[in-house]
Length: 357
Image 1 (cartoon, rainbow, N blue to C red):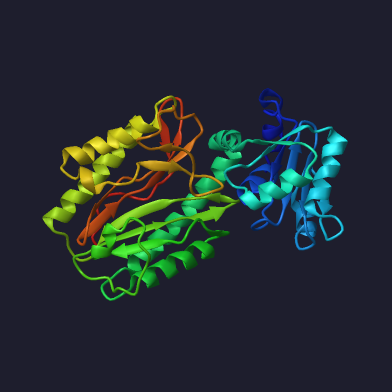
Image 2 (cartoon, rainbow, N blue to C red):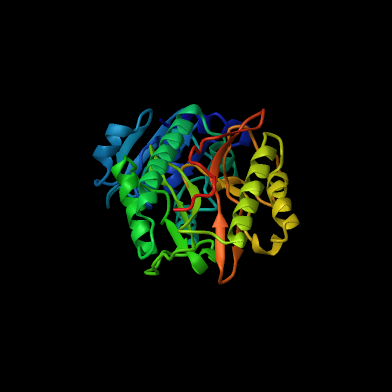
């Protein structure tokens, strides 16, 4: 799976002869081949595609990259020289670059060495990546199924005395065991008073009876991410715990119900936020309703109070409101939804009913 044609198809309309892709995520999106960090460059022109990398990756690139000329960079043939060869061959005068990803130092070097004008195109690339095709969705659904299988296994391990770190480690192992290529991000496992930290780091704290355990995790399959959060209780819950949980669930369902192509990200966020505010917990929901997911775990567009733009059909967005009471507890429930013309499709199947282990 690659998106060379999709990228090439918008160049003329934006006055571009080519785009230069140095960011790991965009290189993968274009070529379908993963090389880490800055170990690769892809160029998409109106008529041809190129992929440059070093000797560690050229054989693998030849096996996986389709519809592109592959060249090897070395001391005698630095990236800038290879790119200039393409610039001369393709008569490129305006080349897009990833202004939101490229370092200032790299931009300075490319600006000095490349024989064309460099034009910012990150927003254009984000717009293309925002709308997932069927092949992308199938990878994301498979990644979601893997994460859910890991969750099902892990529920039997959550009990008093087990530490947050142990549960996090088991989640990672289980996702890899069931076929994940990698984690989407470092898993979050927080319990009891640590649950009020939305992005808390798993610690040596033992889980105790009467606490919530919040687990936020995901994995990659086919280069695409899954993302989910479930909060479970151990032993028993208080009335306050049950109220907070049910409020978060009601807010999540309200946001999902509001999600539809053409509706703004702010409107989706607002539908969930009103539920939490009306229940008296408004100050304890500090983040947004959701973010897009894809090649990267955080993409665009987002369901945030500041996003006044309509969400496009085909966008894949997390649905993850939460309530965090400092020093006491936290609850977050997260699914992933696909925006459609009729509403949205929830690709997360794991139960959201309050589970007391």
